[in-house]
Image (cartoon, rainbow, N blue to C red):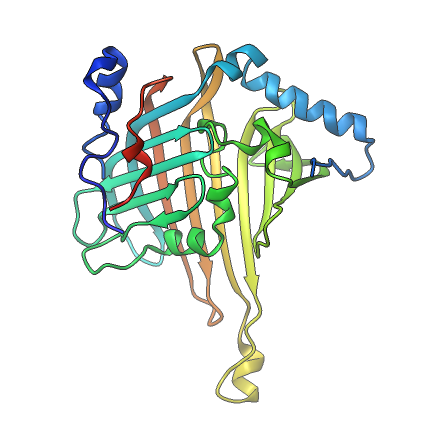
Length: 297
């Protein structure tokens, strides 16, 4: 899939909102709440508190589209070196989502993820026409896009806004302490088969969604001989999303700092870690979006 040339094109008749979106054109049955030691009422109350933490029902319902833009920094944390600066854009309408990061380098053009409501698609990440490790991971676990998990509450597709549509399960796993703070931990089990173990974390006091972790572990015991096989470790991949710096936008509390970190632990013991840090400087709602935002060429 090639990056669309006219990304995020919008009718000129839309006025000021159109100008916001055009700045991005340069970028290429019911759900149950099982629980662990807590009653169902408490689990349901946590969900209600999370939705209230986003905004009132009226404010949430008023949003039909969202356009997010900002700056992106890519770093190779382990397994290499380097830091690239670029731009990022996130557009959503209902369950449709498009996420783009662009870096002015031939060895890493950036990312372009698309879910048009039916199909998940990914653009090549470099001039050699190959995917990045993170892109390959999400492609193999495409429920991350299909269920609207990527980007958390930054997209209109966030599954907790309407759990009935996703037929997923949220399993409460209790209070935990991560990154130095108390959080409520839930395991998200999608309706579609998925190898990844998906956990969502909510700040204990505010019930804001602050972290998602997707983890896949694949056993690997096939070496050249019995001795080599015994030494091989599992192949582990982990994608972590963290969210912070929440700000009020049209009556909604949304994060303006979003970090993705992808870790790969290979059977031979080597590890690579890549990180993308995004800072959103503009979030706009109900911008008239051209349908081509969610089409590929």
